[in-house]
Amino acid sequence: MSEGTIKRLTDRGFGFIDTGTNTDMFFHMSNLEGVSFEELREGQRVSYTEGQGPKGPRAENVTPI
Image 1 (tube, rainbow, N blue to C red):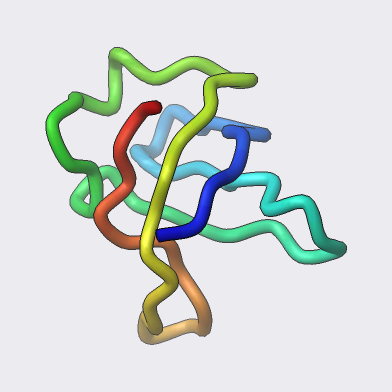
Image 2 (cartoon, rainbow, N blue to C red):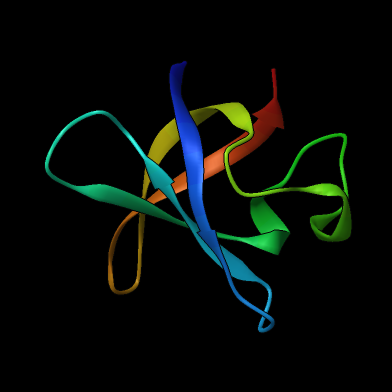
C-alpha cells in the first residue's frame, strides 16, 4: 500500500492524491474503502493501492489513515 495526501476533490465524485512525486494519482468514489466520498477532505492522508483504469493509472482501495 502506498500513502499520499488528497490534493483535490471535485463535485463529480473523483479526486486526486498527491503521491509525493511529480505525478498525482486519480481516484473515483467507487474505489473508496470504509469511508464515503462526502467524508473526505483535501489535505487528508490516505493509503491506496496503485491500479490501472481505462484512462491510465488510478488509486484503488483508498482508505483514510
